[in-house]
Length: 480
Image (cartoon, rainbow, N blue to C red; front, side, top):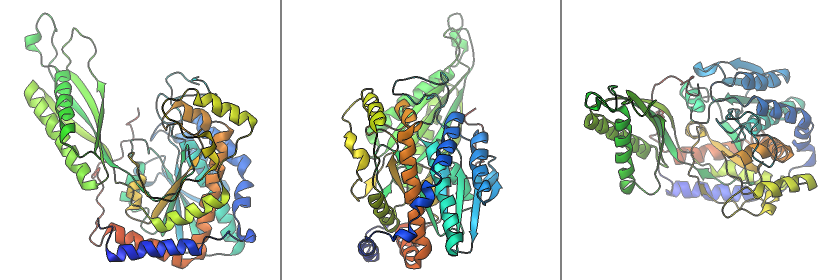
């Protein structure tokens, strides 16, 4: 992927200058923030319903219906069950172009149920919880979209706003299947956001990743009486893990490799007949993700041969890294700076102080909740299925402080803040930024042209999209 050609440099310089040109505040009569804020009560109610449902990937039946129903009630036409996924949907309103898509996630994570209180207190012991804030994600996107649609209709501005209800971001690659099905092929720009412990709209990339479940099959036997007659599937898993851990010395430092044993047998006195391990590999370059995954497969094959077991594996998901777009990021950053961060009242400050008492390590200052991070490129180590979308249409996103500064994602502390007013304030800020960014795109064809030019330069002239997960069908039961 070429990033520093003369043309690429010219595009970046042009984007910078264009950002300066647009740096002044939006005209008051064009401001969409009041249209967003008018929906705040509905938005909080919607978010809390999704918070209470806390449904896992591809099982988000009530969450999907609630989001789609909200949009349908606001004049959107809904296409449900897209890309072979019952909980995926596309909601559209408006006429003609440009077409701007807004992503909406709504899946929860297993084992992180938590009440909106600053102490560990599961609502359902062992149950799922919104530890990545996707209940806020989907709600802010739907709220922004309804405000945008009202503004389009009220000003008779041509354009279509489209909300993509995208399930199973957490390990299910829902957006990859929507991308593979061509659902973004006629879209001009895609916008998204994500809950965070800070306010940031910098251009960014991420790790691509690919995952697989490796299942070993052995021969059961009495582990004390006749162990020689058995072949341990768990030995296959352990041998594979030993070899992949040796790989770490011989991988690029930017690569990541992690696993969990999902089946290790049932009883110590039985030679395990079956065992399973679930692997992720990550790297910022799609080609390296494929290479690393192939090395893991080779280790599994060797482990099976060495332990006298059989092995089969299933690719679970695969995501491209995010393809950055500085033009779009610059517009989002300008609106985020203009709209400001998140203020706490006295009760929220007490909640935040208590939460910080449960966190470890060097924490971000609590005051950073109402600050905006500098505009500079960020290479993120995590992964997201937004990556695939960003390689077929110009895409950009941002984060707002829905969590107490210093809170890591995928933690009970993130769930707690996301279920009360701190999370709601960050969510509404995100909805305002999405709406204002979309307004600029609908009224400035040159801005869209610049974003598309940068997109084509970064992607390269010979790029052909081939999903890392291949032609597998959506794993609709991967959370069951």
